[in-house]
Length: 386
Image (cartoon, rainbow, N blue to C red; front, side, top):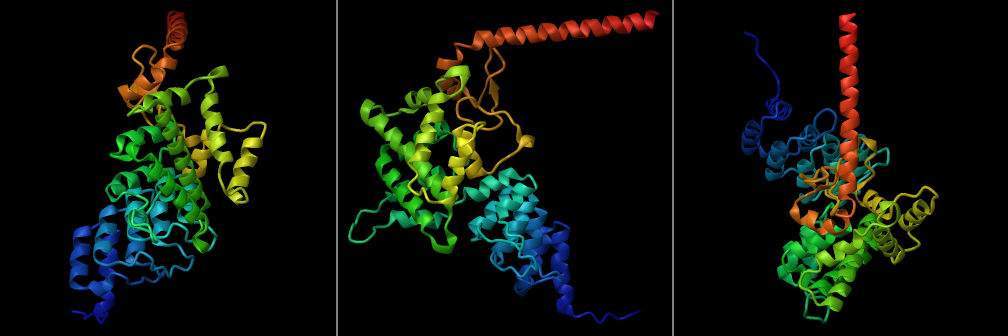
């Protein structure tokens, strides 16, 4: 029998990468428990186990490695692809979120000058783009729950930490959804002024954060602050506990050609009030909206925050809050789609005026389709009989 002279250390390291290649998280945990020094090893391509697991898009492998002490910031890849770059390329949003929560930086550039979210967009993983672009670490929010300077009152009441963190992490930036979240997330609607102030502070911080300046996140915080401020104005005038319906009906009011003129004007005013007009981002927005064939302001804002999705992501959206892939349709016209009965209720004021027309158009289309099917059958019978 031939004896192997392979170094036991090299053999052990190979087993780690083999376990990852075979998606065997149980074996990986055993190997790392027995040999914790293997967690941050490099292979012949200068890649770590975490980078391999992220590229495979395996959530359990990534969690196991992080639990065992994998360094999410370790990167000696020759083209500077970080673990988050590989996670973004995998298309697995859970993997991206795990890496971000472990401290991965979304602003790291590879050797071709692209961030993880830009790589995700390049290969069409737009859900990963949204997750990365909208991530805010919990510790960055906790900072505002502590007193600053001589003021013993924290900018954000500590009991709002969970609700506020969920609110600013939201991916759907449709203004109606933002207003709905203000109502749905516990405690937010009773503290609108504090929330607006904290969002303004976060907007300023992102724009003056040295090498980590993030103009997109700065604009998102400004956008949320603007919506919160407008909701507060309506609440002060009307004194309602829940002003979601009032606000939503205004935003969803159709104008000429059924376009949402009021919402578009509302969002353009928000853009005009962005305090950093010398920023590259602001100039890009203005240039886009100044074009003769300019898209809606909502499209521009959503593309800015969540990345442009292109034609392949032409998925249905809720006609009230803009949520993707809504579960229900109007029971009458079967055309307009909603998340649930609440979204349908918010939109009914305007939809009821065109529902009957859509029903008739659907019936006419069905009649034409049925007539074509009859004609085809008659032609088929004619060909068979002759």
